[in-house]
Length: 192
Image (cartoon, rainbow, N blue to C red; front, side):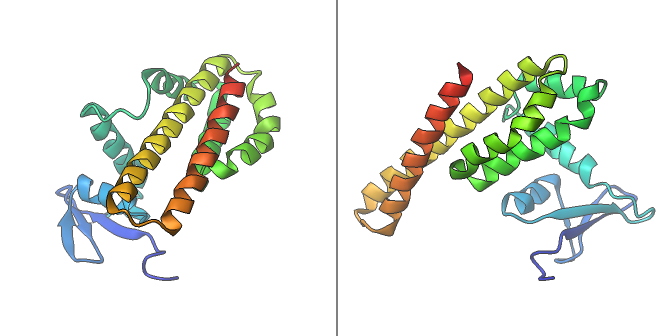
């Protein structure tokens, strides 16, 4: 396994300080968030017990960002997540969320294909109490992500226009815009 493919091992000392085993220095939660944003997987373990603390620290990073007003999760989604810990939804919510984020990672071109694959799971989910509210929240989340993609494409377009260097990037932006328009149309149909 290549060095960058292995999770970056972070050890937590009794003092709660976090130690990067690759660079042999102490790191902060913000450093760990930066590793993750750059595409690196991390694993955080307690030095003394060997317990995996990764989930705990990732949740702390999310909570820190949310508390600073960098809201990604709408309040209704947070409420639904809390409810899912005490309902039968607990068994399907992780799979549902994982599939949603996988679609986002793969890009808008795969969205329609994966929505079709989700139909059997959606039929099962639709029987759960509160599913309609959760579905509305996911639609709102996906629409905000599409808006973000659209804003990014517009920014890249302006940057490309500023450089006046036409080429392969222009074709990529055109394709991204086409995919965004198709995705927005499909989201609009699903919302009706």
